Image 1 (cartoon, rainbow, N blue to C red):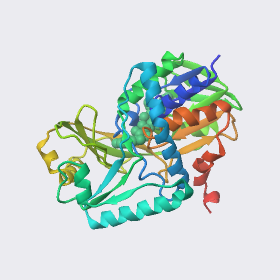
Image 2: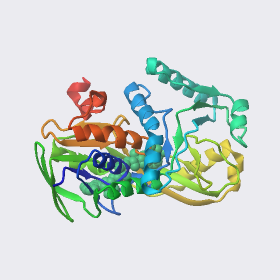
Image 3: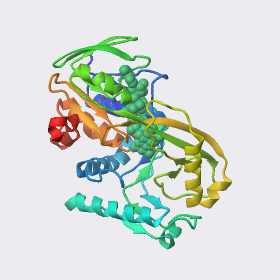
Image 4: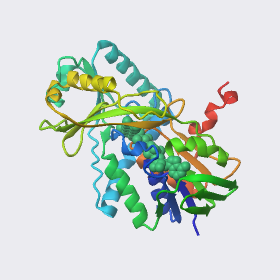
Length: 369
Ligand SMILES: Cc1cc2nc3c(=O)[nH]c(=O)nc-3n(C[C@H](O)[C@H](O)[C@H](O)COP(=O)(O)OP(=O)(O)OC[C@H]3O[C@@H](n4cnc5c(N)ncnc54)[C@H](O)[C@@H]3O)c2cc1C
C-alpha cells in the first residue's frame, strides 16, 4: 500500500519524499525525466539567508530555520549515504560596486532587522578596509558589502544525489520517466496516470517545479509559478581561496569559482546569451581582478521556479484534503526545512499555521483587495 505520492524528483520533491519516508510513510517519488526543466541541476548552490524575506518576516524566519536545519541534514545524509554535500556556513557577503548599491543594501539590511523584531537579525555593513581582511584580492571598484553570519553554500548535485539515495535506501520508491499526464482526485484518495503506470495513494504532494502550474488545478490547488532564467559561469580551479560565499561568486569545494547569476524574464527560453554572460564576468572581475586571469570552463542557464511575489508557495487543498503543493526558488536553502519540518507536517495531514502566509490564496484578487 502506498501512503504518499510525491510528484517531482528535484530538490523540493526529493527532500519532502525523504522526510515522508522518515516519518514511516510508504512513499513513491514520480519524476518526469531529462526533457523536463530541472532547476535543481542548474543552480548556484547558496544556502542563503541575508536577502530572503524583505517585507515578509515569515519568509525570513522560514529561511533562517532552514539554514539552521542544514547541518543536521548534511550530517544525516553523510552518515546514511556516504555523500558529502559540501555544506559550509561561514557567513556570506553581498558586495556593492557603487555607493547607490551600498546605500540600498544598508537600507534593506536595516529593514530586515526591524522586521525580525525579537527574533533578531545579525548583520554588518562593511567598507573595503574591513572586507580586504577577509576577502583576498578585492578590487578597487568594491565600495562595501553586507555580511550576515547565517549564510553558506553546498554542492547542489551531491545534495540531490544524497536525498535520492537516502530515500531509496530507506525503502522509498523512485520512478523516473514517469511524467504525470492525468489525475483523478477525491478527498484523501488520489490516482495519477504516468507513462510508467498508474499510482494511487491517500496523500499526494505536488513538487514538480514549473510543472506544478499545470498539475495544481487538478488537485484543487493553485501554483502560479513562472520560469525566470539564470545564467552561471564556472572558472577553472583557482589557487586563491575565498573563505566565504558571496551573492554572485562562490568557490566550490573543488576550487572552481561559480559566477552568476542573472534574473531574466524570457519564458521557457534556455538559450545562453553572451551579453548577459559578459556582464556577469565583468562584475566578477571588478570585484576580484584576479578572476580575469582564470579561464571559463563551463557555463549554463536554468529556469527558476518563481511565484508572482518571489516567495514560496506551500498549500493544502481544501477541496481534496490530502493534496499538498510546495514551490520555491530557493530549493537548496530550503532543503533543511522541506525534509525536516514541512514533510512531518504533511505526514501528520495538515500544514502548521506558521505556513499560512505562504498559501497561494494571497494571489486571489478578492484577498488582495
Ligand atoms: C540559475 C539558478 C540559480 C539558483 N541558485 C540557487 C541558490 O543559490 N540557492 C538556492 O537555494 N536555490 C537556488 N536556485 C533555485 C533552486 O534551484 C530551485 O528552487 C530548486 O531547484 C527547485 O526545485 P524543484 O524540485 O521545485 O524543481 P525542479 O528542480 O525543476 O524539479 C522539478 C522536477 O519535477 C519533474 N516534473 C515536472 N513535471 C512533472 C510531471 N508532470 N510529472 C512528474 N514529474 C514532473 C521534473 O522532471 C523535475 O525533476 C537557483 C535556480 C536557478 C535556475
